[in-house]
Length: 378
Image (cartoon, rainbow, N blue to C red; front, side, top):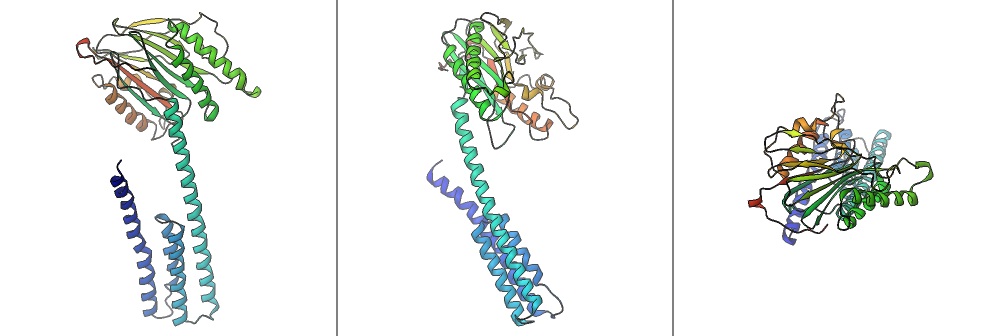
């Protein structure tokens, strides 16, 4: 964004707020003028409290204080011309209005402080997300790629769900995973898992070997950092996918992760039958115990990877989100369009918010004649 665009963006809210300030000012002027012109047995001055009470909805503490002071001055003026400043009832009204004005100013200041804190939290979360979840390329090898991350907490924007891609010799390797738990421990474990994958993807010859290496890193991290009261309760599910450039197949190794959906050119949606190992970090797998499953993945097919936050999202009746059924409605959609449809439909199903983080990665295998290969180092 250019400095000129930034200035215009700042100027527009300022103009809007400046115009809204006229509302309580006009209200005070009208109430004062009418109250001074009608019989004294009709009391309009209590309505002056509306002005300072309304102002915090669009202005800060300084403007709210000025409106409150103006309302108090108006009440003093009305009291002077009607009953006099020595009237006990008028004194009580003035003190009450002063207390109310001070209260709304304090409220406005606390609200602005909280907004600043939330803005800082969002900024840190966005920075952490950029560090952990590197943006996926739109095209890598024979694949068109799109990704989507939906955080359960709007202020957090990041949690324990993760994905990554690595380009090796003539092969694309993808990781999608879900770390149990939330907060800093989950983010720390996700960082370990992602780092181990990005390093091991270029060193390990097969997916089972890569899965074993990543699990060793996760297990070692948990042994060093897991509190004694949480022993055995922290783990991560993961799905490792390997797609060669030339062979129309996809290889997968699952560690307790939901299987992907395969959207074929024949408009069918299938769920590959995997032989999953236990999640990473539970200490049940040894070297060489991970399985390798191989499936057809033809040009024109789309592979949809996801975390359990998607399929475990519930509607108001407690029904889970039927991902495979909904995806079948958009068989011809490209990766970006498919995730757009899913995002909108998923949030509509769950009432606008999720109880758990959700991540999706869509991989579309392009026909050989249309491949624009971009080398990306994961």
